[in-house]
Image (cartoon, rainbow, N blue to C red; front, side):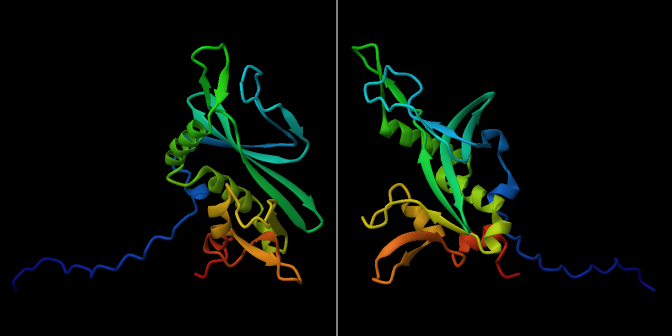
Length: 206
């Protein structure tokens, strides 16, 4: 009887890997950190800034996204959240961290262009996810049980102007416009029908 090689088992098709939310993957935790605070201080921490923004304490819970560079932590975005009844009102603010030295006077100027550039660099460290979305997603994920049980999340922003800077992409991917009896949009509510939200809440179909 002639010998033969053992039969090979037929190759099974691999099931496509499920897309895990970034907060589960944690591909680069050395680049960022989340911290919670009972209050947060907005504004410039030093006064020799020509376009100075006075410091102001906001006595409300905040979830803050920090950029980590070695041992240095720098706040990038802050998410304020206040619960009243079964609704949580949130707002997201970019921190002021980018300053240019005045070439003639001994003072600095905060630069929106430089701030945006730094934010884009940070976005690359977060795997291409915009920092504001990265922060909002973490907040939703941390509160997924309460949201699934009926807690509403509203984005606190003026909706009558028709524009929502810097929230345009967040509104498109996370929120729905809620109209009053007169047909006017008067609030932006987290939509459980948006794919990104369903992913964060674990509501996607198997």
